[in-house]
Image (tube, rainbow, N blue to C red; front, top):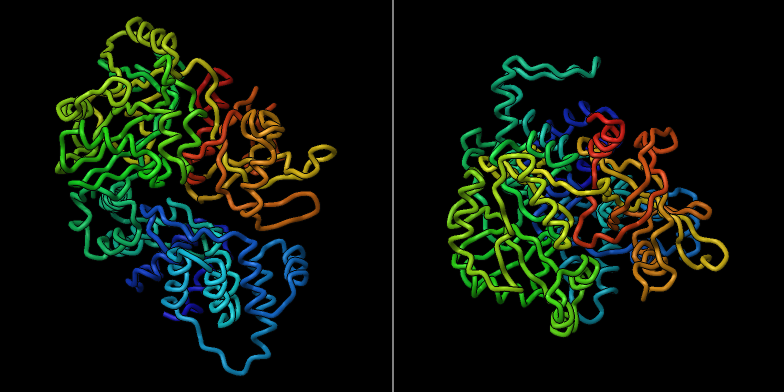
Length: 583
């Protein structure tokens, strides 16, 4: 397929704000495309969701590629970028002027774009930066009208065409089951109708389930093309990470029991980070909640899993907690968070900040277990786990039948320095990626929010060299858009040795810059912070319709991806809880 054809689809998707129209456009496209490379590119990706590899190209390097491709000066490029407010649009204008003066130009194919970008991600060794610049510049030099814009946006992982997970799922269902069950879209009325709603809904559930288990849009599209039977009984694959099951916050123990029922499994909620442990024979791979491979950073965990988990093919859900090597007491998350990103001196850091792995669920053991009730999954987990004090253990669990029993366990959890309790439905399956009431968390304070940084403003006075006010956003799960909810400037330190500093955040965000206007920049949403606040208020000042009153950064969440931040639904629920009711 010519890249220009794909760009035409991008333009149509970007040109409408109507979710139904986007779904119709993408569904028609999916009907006629089976090439894996094209199916990844339409999502703005060159790796499937489960693959932790990234392009790793900052805007600064892209500017160099535009310079090589067009011959324009850095000053000219940055000037056009500032004027357009979008590096993709700037590249398109500059490449367009160069192309007009070129008599012969090889038309780009999707395969060429995909292959070059894959090479960019996989390059290693001496001279890697120059080689990355050349690969991107080669694409830009051959780009036709509109193509440079989307090449740049794909590299920045900021396609801006409004394809959320919900739209992609619905497009797959429309494409392959719409005609079968009488689904139709009226473009004039922007309405969607289905003749056989129950059967269509069942097909949609199969697609969603396959997406949850495989975490791979391309494979689900290929299966859906074969029909419903190909979507049934999809197995998990060890060494391929899946989305973890998420838990909403209950108001208190009584509310938790109302949601999950009795008897309920009450487990300590540890102040650590989520770790998904995969084993297939001799190979063990560790993934964070954001599906980042951190195997190299935790050789101690790999070692204890190899010796103390008695199953050759397994996927386990766990919480890793820092342990004080002297007192043996749990440490706050911040003490071990630096291990997630560390590439050197791993052994030294592991000795300084040892960890304990608290295993609490199992998704796979020789076969998928996610449809098995939780109480039975816990039995399997107990059978294969040989506990080692201070290194590996089953998450502490107590069965409770009454509020009074739950309150006692809750009090004990807090006394021992934990964040609170997890309360779980013992008959529930494991549902990747969903907050479905199969389990809830109970904490003594207003739930914090995890937000993505989408912009920032330069400071003044002694903070003039740093970004000092950070625009934060929550996620709309349907559209995939980030909705602003406030600005954070407190909870951040001036000295790095005291904690997360303005200097550190500035260094993290500048390579992600996509726009700059006056004192304010916009960035790719990749940096995630946890914030607390005094209150959530209705507000027209931000696109979410809400504003955080006195927000304060609690900590950076390096184990979170931007696609996992709190949603607008979470905000509505928390705002409703403030008023004594749930929305």
